[in-house]
Image (tube, rainbow, N blue to C red; front, side, top):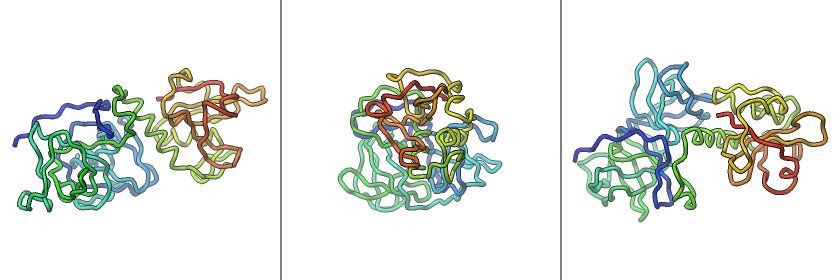
Amino acid sequence: MIKPAKLLRTTLLTVALSTVCTVAASAASVGVGTVNTDALRLRAEASTTSTILGTASAGDTVVILEDAGNGWYKVDFNTVEGYMSGEYLKVSAKADVAIGYGMVDAGGSTLNVRSGPGTSYSKVTSLSDGAVVSITGIDNGWYKVKTSSGAVGYVSSEYMDICKSSAGSRGNATATASSSSLGQQVADYALKFLGTPYVYGGNGPSCFDCSGYTSYIYRQFGYTLNRTASTQLSNGVSVSKSELQPGDLVFFRYNTSYPASHVGIYIGNGQFVHASTNQYKVQVNQLTSGHYANVYIGARRIL
């Protein structure tokens, strides 16, 4: 079976499934990399001056697609392909780790699921083209998978596209721009700090104030924000409340003469995450109702 060339796609595929797949220019995966530094940037090219596509945290795993040379690897991180420095990755050709989901891309043919990582192992079952399975590990270019029927086995990574889990209600979503995908990464990264203490003047990562929190999060993605909530109003571009996307900065004003007195990061579904003086910690609150809806003044898009 000869696999046709795959086209690079930077948007979510619209599929009638409870899993939405983001398909990139895929190749056979050669291993798994585990991030061993606080934050590791995903770059568009194998260079520290290249565009930042995302940021992985310590302990995050990436799929190693190839050795790009000069100490860099081409990787797949959260369905986005790019490059990471091998200096900060612990690489293994074999690992039992939940990678996410995979969609069969076999050019219209079925794909055999084997009892072990190789064509010499017995056939467990077969998957139709386009079928989605959970990927639970990798072994020398073969993915360990679990099918919807519960069968467990191995498939060649050459015939699988890595997918991102999503709510069933998004199964018919329209294509999402790559900037929105990066905004979701910002929101996801921001949520990693839930419960971190609020301390006035805190710049992170052990404590934050509101603008110190937003500045720290965006700094990990290569963006420098102004330091206070009021001055962050001049960062990025204005966006209406009805057009908010994950990663957008949301601003509030209490009884003050300053243009803004508080800032957080929108995470979707009418919610935002922020370093709050309410419970003196990083927490999630509703934006569309209650107290924060009454003091909301606007939003800015940084990406």
